[in-house]
Image 1 (cartoon, rainbow, N blue to C red):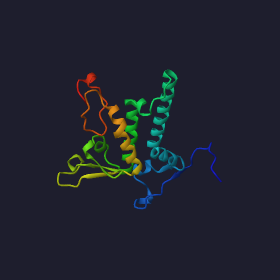
Image 2 (image 1 turned 180 degrees about the vertical axis):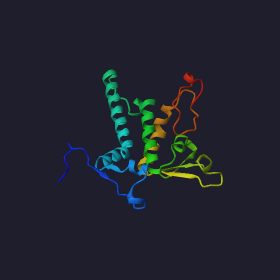
Image 3 (image 1 turned 120 degrees about the vertical axis):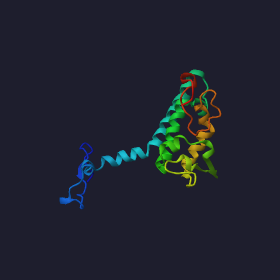
Image 4 (image 1 turned 120 degrees about the horizontal axis):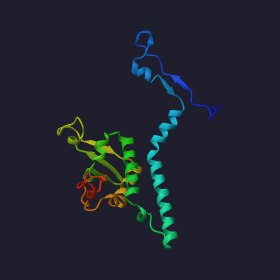
Length: 192
């Protein structure tokens, strides 16, 4: 029988630690002794699905903006025409989430990724982070290669072809980063 949705998820103790006297856990183990059964599964799935949720929200906002523009001006703009830096940042977050989830690099390796680190084999992309930019690696170590699957590659290609340029600040056309900084030079006096 299915559990009643109105009832909170049951708590279950983790197994006792066999290597300790009386099977007792250390402090850190006892803090995590109680785990939720059921509730965590949906929370984990929502985290995994976050990139898709962001893209769905972006698509809904694009549709809303197109309809609003048609009502105001009598013409339906293309999807690309209604994308601005705000939606571009959301798309950047979705791409970063998907890459981080699949490859689990340090976030700095992805945030500071450069366009020339991206290579394509047909329709599939990979990002190769030079070893000198990877924590605990030196120039003689292997580079870190982030492999993207087809769906991620397609999203990345679409972002590079249509969205990234809309995320650049004025005078930043030669920005070498995959995810350009979002700090206005006029406000700060320099790019972040």
